[in-house]
Length: 97
Image 1 (cartoon, helix red, strand yellow):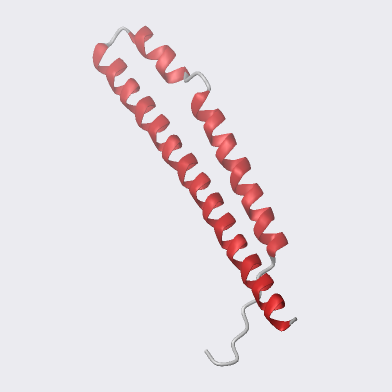
Image 2 (cartoon, rainbow, N blue to C red; image 1 turned 180 degrees about the vertical axis):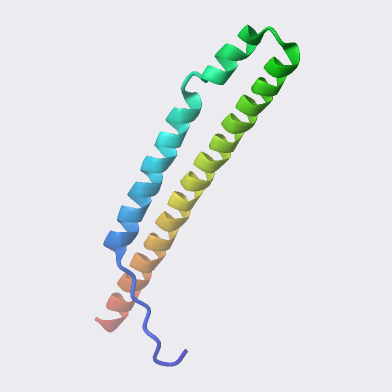
């Protein structure tokens, strides 16, 4: 990669991190919202249907938790990448002085 130049738009990277944080918070709020399926499952009068509804609600909540966790992880990783780019830029500038 002789002569290759890597350019990173840190403003765009920070905006992406903000979007990931907002999405993670929104998904977490959705997960924590009282689940209508759970509330109605006991009212079905059919134990098999109630159990199936609870299984679906549990899987849905678990999936939302995993998605929220992944978004938080990517936000953190982008933060590490942005810091690395900033540190590299500072090191190069210091070496040129």
